[in-house]
Amino acid sequence: MHIGIITFATMTQKDIRLLDKTGLIDLAKAYNQPAFRAKQLYEWLWNKSCTSFDEMTSLPLGFRERLKEDYTINGISENLVQNSIDGTIKSRYELHDGNMIESVLIPVPEDNRYTVCVSSQVGCSLSCKFCATGQMDRVRNLDPGEIYDQVAKTNVQSMAYYNHPLTNIVYMGMGEPLLTYGNVLKSIEYITSPDGLGMSQKRITVSTAGIAKMIKRMADDQVKFNLALSLHAADDLKRNEIMPINEQNNLEILMDALSYFYQNTKNKISYEYIIFKDFNDGVEDARKLLKLCKKFPVKLNIIEYNQVEGLNYKKATKNNLDAFAKVLTDNGVMVTVRKSRGEDIDAACGQLANKA
Ligand code: SF4
Image 1 (cartoon, helix red, strand yellow):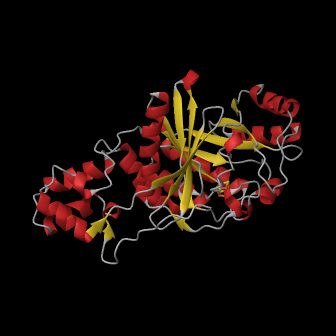
Image 2 (tube, rainbow, N blue to C red):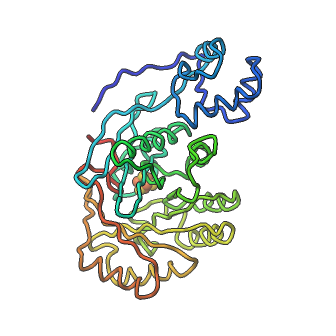
Image 3 (cartoon, rainbow, N blue to C red):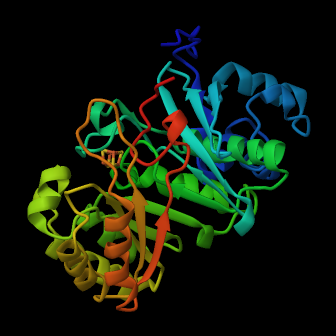
């Protein structure tokens, strides 16, 4: 385990990135600066991804000095980068308080697709049985800036390695994004704002293990990004077994919430279905899943499982996977089978656990 030198901001210093647009306007006023300084600050923080007040050269020197005295910028710093033989890159980042998180760049050059999978929490409280992150406790939520940084840094990484900017962002790394909903929304604002990174909301997918009331809340908030449900089992008995969250948010409640989401937003919904050997890979499981695919338009991603050390779940055989997928495609479901990516560096679905 890496032991970093942790520099804490002094007690009086606040993280300037916790101020939103209105907060920055108030700040400019409080320092007797014209209102346009707030816009300049916003652009330095969220468009140029600046992590030092010294670099904000369009701001007067005196103003910068005062900001340095009163504020800090709690960025994330690269701690370890691992390259898979298949081109996937996993990055581990150290946060200002010494905690670690991971993000993964998944390049698919043949489809012109460069996706980053970002984390939203340090650890996770939902304890899904197949997931390495779920074996850690939840330590804390990530700040909006810490989520934003993963995107900004991976975008630079994608340019450096593949000469191509990111095309897609998925909130499928460590943590449950809907349990830190406010911070996730703020991060999306900074990633998509024309004064920020200017990326499209349509290219963003937030993935949940299934918090029904938050799915409805997103519908009420008229969010513009896409939603993925980590389904992984098509009946309550099996889902309870691998995802304890299903006990309070069973499939009927979840389907009701997703229908509400679709009716209110018409945004894309996808199901993620990790297929495990001898657990959820039978034709009968596929038939149950088919019913859940007919409730509203949905795209199904079947994901091959990657063995997690110490856990008993195994990858389904190719025969079973093919027979399973056939039941669904034969009945008109849009299915994508996602091959394991970054397996050799523990970067695949359910494998993120800050392991070197
Ligand atoms: S699969 Fe997602 S929600 Fe479940 S424990 Fe892992 S990180 Fe948490």
